[in-house]
Image 1 (spheres, rainbow, N blue to C red):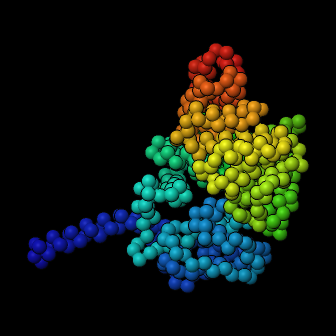
Image 2 (image 1 turned 45 degrees about the vertical axis):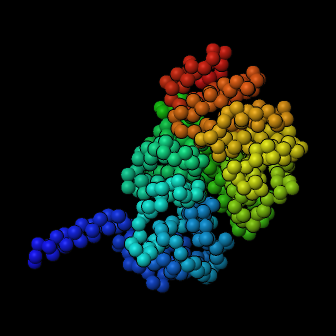
Image 3 (image 1 turned 90 degrees about the horizontal axis):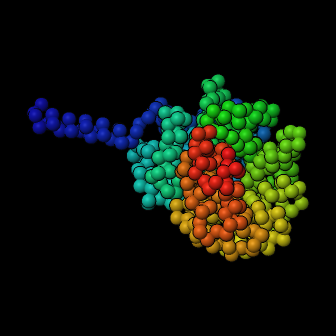
Length: 495
């Protein structure tokens, strides 16, 4: 062999090695043969096979071999939005088959929408070997927000599987720093981490209660408790876990509030577990979920049932926004379903459905705040208007977190009718609490509460809402430091 030929072979070897590294040939699919005429059956044991590899353009059959209906759909539950076309939009009856042609290269996790504890994976490879780390994700500026959500989902899933939960939380902070749009999606990503934590917990692995689990509006506990309920269907076990959270978090957070987020997740998962025969009727779908929220009430404490109800109505709002379950928002009176509930539930309903109305009628992202506020002012229900404007300003702050001009937001709140202005101001605080970089929420919130165009009454409403909740976000030492830094007249309410 000549020296020239040897050099060519060495070069080819390096090229092949680079190619294999570039396309990340992991054991996730190397151990599986490419299926030519694939079929996936569903029984009481779940999907079989649970993982298949197919070529781009392959049609896959899903067959119901169980005694009940089942509904194969793309992750993430309950919106099924990672691959929205991969969704029959209804359950399959016993013995029925649904065919779906996979036209998108990728690793597509799916679940039974009626019982998402059952899951599987379809890996679609193209003419080239499938690159699980799609290079499009390396250029987020070229992607839409929804495309970036898909990238974050797959990235976080990989990190959880390969490196564990600690690395997943560390990556959350990096995403906050590098990708401004991530703040709006962090709650859903922490849902994913919570789901993964439950699966580890279910295997008997120790669960570590840590400060990070309170990030992004406590999405972690929403995901954890939803997975527990889907897997066990045991309300008492779910309550036992929820009741343990605050006690176990006190070493990390001064006054943890995670217990209520746990009950929120309980309500959310209960609504999404409804009987498909109830579709199209909000009242019938809500009744069993609200009944469960009544059951979790202990003594005279109403907060647990109220937070459970926020989860129920949040799930209803999602269904409205995404045209699920045969439900359609009444655009003339979107909150009609809320009016007859008792006060604690009515407030939750108005808050959630108002945001759904914005999403469906005003395109969601970048909505016209004043137009939406004018609509809310005409709802003719004092408590409902207060909670709806609260939710509206919170959503507005969430969407514009990285370019939210505080003076402009205050001006918006000044244009709503007087009695609603404190709720508008407090809604901004909630938006900043849930969607600002973890550990630094207080910086933005205190800056907002000190906006010079706020009246003294509005400043009192702003700080009066946030300061009593400082201890729900931070450790004892950090809470003390923040409280010491605020004006002396407010230190008494800061804890």
